[in-house]
Length: 436
Picture 1 (cartoon, helix red, strand yellow):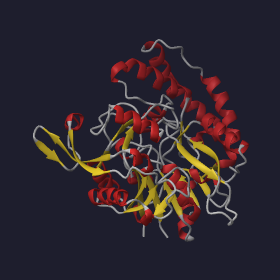
Picture 2 (cartoon, one colour; picture 1 turned 180 degrees about the horizontal axis):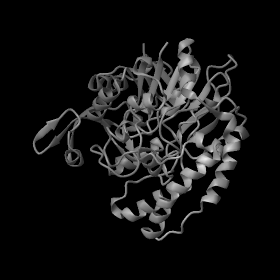
Picture 3 (cartoon, one colour; picture 1 turned 90 degrees about the vertical axis):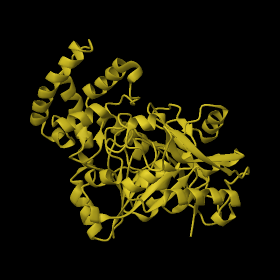
Picture 4 (cartoon, rainbow, N blue to C red; picture 1 turned 180 degrees about the vertical axis):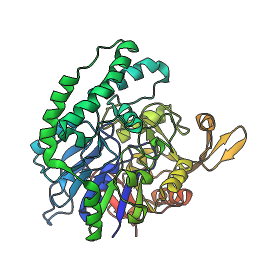
């Protein structure tokens, strides 16, 4: 039995939380493999079905930032993998909030290899963005980038360092000397005190101790027993540090390759790669966006789709579906299937557009351009399809969707080269149609 990777194929915010929630019924482990609390999953939680009704009543909405989606299922072990950067204060606050909502978080496992977000990471993130001015990257200012930078520079502190305070203090003293010099001399900020940080993180260490584990053998042993492992990414393919729209990207690797390095599994351990794909495109922050809308259609799409960030609350930029991007994501990730989300949002549009290629200086690009300047100035080449102009949120079988809606899905499938297995027509779990 192999593992399943679930990841975003666009710029994030594709609805990965709902997809993971749906798939978690059949898995034993849900593993978050990269990112930090700069990302979020929104999940609609339901009461267990009594069997007397077809509709599961919605209970509440959970917004998760670090804890894997599987935390709500007693049979699932949620895992924070090696590739995640952890802000321990944020994680503990999130765990406390989940406990208050009646959820058991005792099965959570956190890799000792995961890196710690430190106070100076958050401060450097804030002042650097302010210093960049109009050239800012649009980060969430939560210290993610500076933490990953220290990881790459081999001066980062890891979760396991919390349990040897002598080593923790030695590493902290070394790195803080540099960070304080930058904060005070470059940005005119007050230096930070090592003792205060050590005291704060020693408290975190005691509270986190029951959750710390060697997660790599844990997952391999699970696969050896024939159990199911789901690897859950944050952000999306076009925000990948190596394969995204650099420099307007995140600081880690959301792509399928990142699922391996961030969990400790190998290529042969992966059976399926499910791409979560929105029926249109959104992105938060700066960067190129060839199909972006700026007119009244953008206002309608934002309002109907409720396009505001789970973590930041920022309004997302919106645009028509981009098949150039999806073909790129299919190749980079080795997608085996799509989970298409938010088809219902398009129900009130009489005409829909799909970008089939880009045009730049008279040349057409059906594949992703090799140079960022092309992408920044690319003109989308659209094809138009008729909308269905009717409510589809109560449809329970794919074959009962309007023919124009089915044609739209089929066209997305053709252009991406990857089959669409699920179609979401609303936020609730029951509003998911599985294709034969």
